Length: 96
Image (cartoon, rainbow, N blue to C red):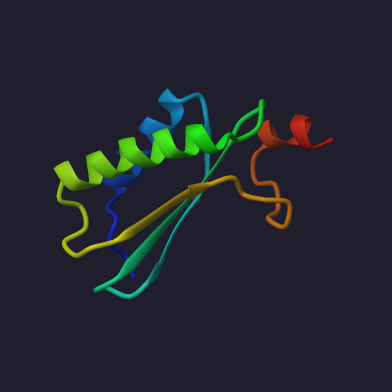
């Protein structure tokens, strides 16, 4: 299910970068009537719940303004967690 365009994905990445985080992954699951947008972020200091909430709010506002998702949706912003593989070189120093 592809409901986020490349342009919207770039805007999401810019918001995350503005908060000094790195976009690790963006997943869309669920169904077209109830999509779940999962965003995983990381940085060198670690991921705080407050920063996740701020990023989520900023992305939610953008998605609503752009009318990017026509139905209701759930937006989850979190750290990748220890069970997810490292994807970028920037992640390695913190996890050594």
